[in-house]
Image (cartoon, rainbow, N blue to C red; front, side, top):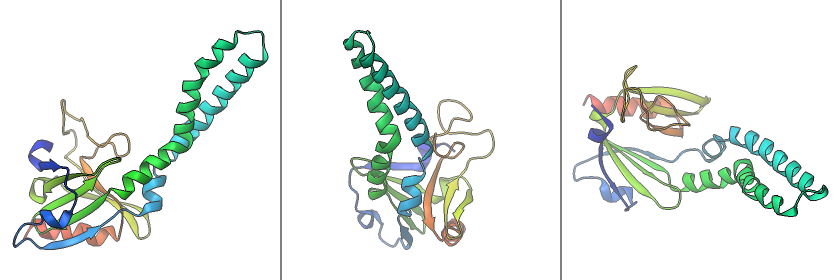
Length: 192
């Protein structure tokens, strides 16, 4: 089984209810918890702070010594990259959070996602690998669909599609409330 067999279609439409088939029952619908979802990329801020400090030091040295002032332009791209790494990625993940919503029916998983525009990805529950639960707080966690060890989805064995945030997994329901209950709904729906 590969990722291509799991993905039925990708569409620009984002109304999840419009994609629920006749006779299909909605078992659960939800969004990630905002705080943990947005803050999951916090380690990038550490590198952003180090890069910003380096870029500012470079600019100060260039502008306060006999070096040609034109060299100061070389620091601008690094300063912009550092600002993105320091705080900009939180804005991007906030946009991603706004566009992320999950819907589980008795036969499919629908995920609305995207940063600047919403996309809809639909998976058959039967074609997804088994689930694992990763608790992040007492009532918030991730339900990850993990292929068997050594098997991946992509151009070579072991290749995964959710890097860098969740290496080793095909996809997941990230930072949802009461993930044990949702995982049980998924597993029960597979065997009905």
